[in-house]
Length: 514
Length: 106
Image 1: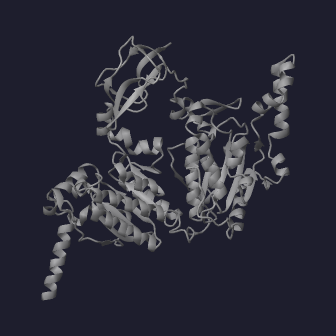
Image 2: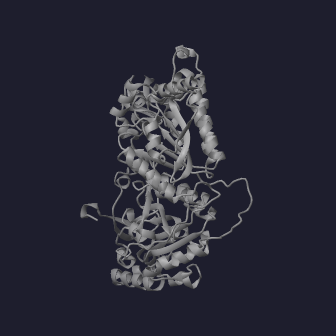
Image 3: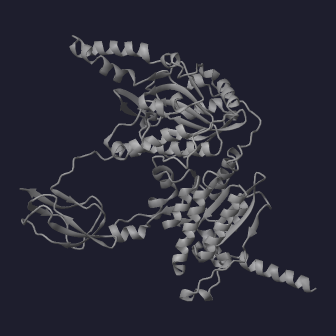
């Protein structure tokens, strides 16, 4: 009887704490279209798989009458469970408890689950919903953030780290998500900024809503801080689960290999790409024409759309795709697209995911704004990431491959393992018009009919250099292939690079142009 | 692609048919810096104005105190000349890149 009393006591204690900030606070949370922290975890993980740790943790603050206040679980829930049957570690800030504010014990719970995830080599998913530092706890809150950032950094490239922004995430708190691999945001719910609308109004007199300053759409389209945008928490969780079908659980394994599946026959690569190199098309359809089930999972869909990145399987093996998008800004390289592709390449390299590049670009975007925004150092990131990557690198030149852009987009010279080119490929130092204007300048200028002469010289250059055969004659292209043969060649390349072993020079680390 | 979505982009003398990004469409045209225009390099509040219109100043003279992030920044004259116009008054909140005053060079 004594035992059952103790059990009852435990049950009562638990039930009390599981109410979080209480019924009223929960209703307020729901009114904002948000689920509670525990509902979120249960919605994300496999059914009945979640085990919560540190339910009984309480804060330790003494100042400002904090010793009289009880904050259940100190406003954050941690634990582990499974997704697709494999273990993941998770934490979720509980906005119903003191606004999910981060105090010392709150941060210790988060770092405890981070340490656990790293030691057990499993993905970490952090659900952020917090008003920020708990002011009453002073510098202990700041120390807490710092401890989290440190763990984000040492875990980077070892376990996948996923940040889900389901509420405010402001001030220093934003830097944890920024250090992780993938940031998920939801329309009307996610808010991220360093200084909020209040401060901006005081300092500048500018009025801006939280949504316009740092809402889900802004971070997906403008800043590039977010990788996945959803209209609801439910859709967001579905995206997280889908991402986890493509990526490995840590850096010492590969992504799961599943049964190979043919692409949807309605995607005909020959019909997607127009011969005229100035005409647009959707490069994602070319990807769909070669990958299993035509199933392409795009990353950062709304940001720097002239560059497409994402995951798909080919022959059952996950590959990371990097492709110029001719229908957006002609597929040029610029500051944002370089940034976007470079970090994705580094993720793939860190987690043993082969990189398949589809090249079709006219070069770099000209402009004072680009030069002054640092297109040199940002553009260098893409070179660095391709050069540094030791995973299998397979490049298909679909059409244009001009100048510096040709070198940057996973060319042979950056150690692509395979380079294939379609027959319409133009691998040259620049497009025929630009090249003819320079090379035949004198002839054109001194001609009786400069316009006619120009046309003639452009045609001459086109015939001689705007093709894949000059590059193929030097071995920079391994094979010139028909578009319809692309999947066969990619399957071959993925299979034959499966045991690729490259030893880089031993060093502490390189110094990429951040 | 819908017609209204398509634009033209010229790269190395070739016109490409493509959608243009908002960022590209809304980019600010570049103009050379004018040393006669004193511009706020940080958002803040005008704490004090130390000169008056018509006054002749030397290069390096303190013109305006701009308080930003709890620091007092002394905006100095980048050239010698007469103060042509003062565009702000004490207590104004100014954004980054606002013209604070203009100097007619000697």
